[in-house]
Length: 211
Image 1 (cartoon, rainbow, N blue to C red):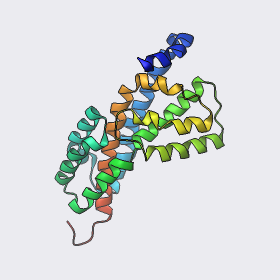
Image 2 (cartoon, helix red, strand yellow; image 1 turned 45 degrees about the horizontal axis):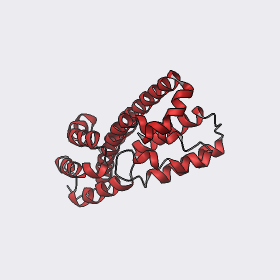
Image 3 (cartoon, rainbow, N blue to C red; image 1 turned 60 degrees about the vertical axis):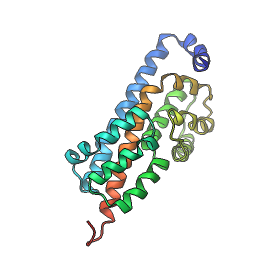
Image 4 (cartoon, rainbow, N blue to C red; image 1 turned 120 degrees about the vertical axis):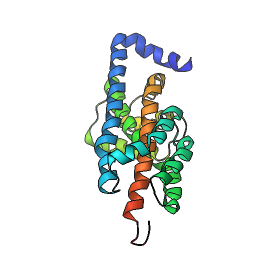
């Protein structure tokens, strides 16, 4: 109720236009996350990790599903460890990389926060010049590394970036009201990226005598 109360004045002022803009924002974030996985993660895993998409995708279905439903990287860690073993990764490496990635690696969250920053700046009429964007990107990068492994934590950690560019923090209430949909997709993207990182590092650091 508190979230709806904070968002109500903005919705009342803008009417259905705000709802349409929020729908476009959600679609843009979801499409961006699929682009991140399809055009960035899978090629890296294929060329650097030597695991083709037709092998990597089926091997990480469980990880994607658990991340999608729990919206937490830490909660998905047991499934990631299980599927890393099935992929044939070195246990000595993935038992280090996956917990570390679950703690600080948040590419999906960083994409969501960047899109949120642009959306809220446009909504409040705050111009973004190059210096402000650079400062905001740095703030988002640092915040993404410290996001707590709980649902909607990416919105709370967005506050420093909004403060840097002068966007009212009240905009966070609007994001909280619609965050469930982006949250499941960005959490799923995060955990699959964790698996991609473990696969890539395992291959690139594999010695001649190591399986």
